[in-house]
Image (tube, rainbow, N blue to C red):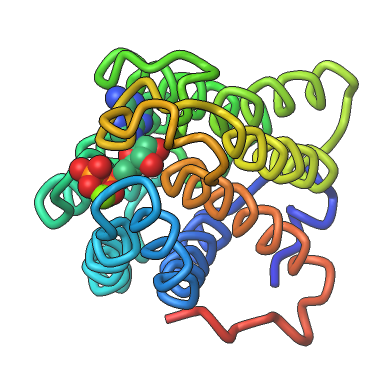
Length: 231
Ligand code: ADP
Ligand code: MG
């Protein structure tokens, strides 16, 4: 797919576009699961919300083929803000708009650029939603994913192991929400009855990091890219 990623140093604009397209496909595939998770502790619209938003994003990707990565993130964030209702639209919109800032003008990303972007994005979500780790939200996935990226960079890892570690930490983060009592968002109305269910937003946030790890991994096998979910 590209040479730079195989040297584990840079993620190209093409990789970023492939990741966003893959995530849109993964959300479409998992729409029912996200809906079911939200039906258990919320109002059952998380799958539909995310799918509506990322199908709108998918439609915009062809026009972004020559944009820098910051501009791509900005367009994703704006599209989510304008198409997704509920709590998750403004939160994911904020993530992409904030993450766009350190990526302005860039056409490829070092691991440290991605860490700076995720940090801005997660901080933006925390500022907007005021959720802390342990309150059964997407923050329970995002915070450990960010920590895993930082630890991987500190250990001198390249993109591939770092992306995989972030996805693994995100998975653990999503699973960690199961026993928690929701303190933020709609699920908090249920109080103790919210315990025993996986948080839908923490789950969609896991899929975001998992999709990136898949795309980063695909760069190994340029002859047979997994394009099932690509636009
Ligand atoms: P709504 O709750 O408005 O129906 P969604 O169902 O699309 O919106 O999204 C619900 C998800 O949003 C929750 O599972 C949770 O992860 C996330 N969420 C809700 N409130 C907050 C908050 N204050 N901070 C972070 N995430 C939140
Ligand atoms: Mg909902």
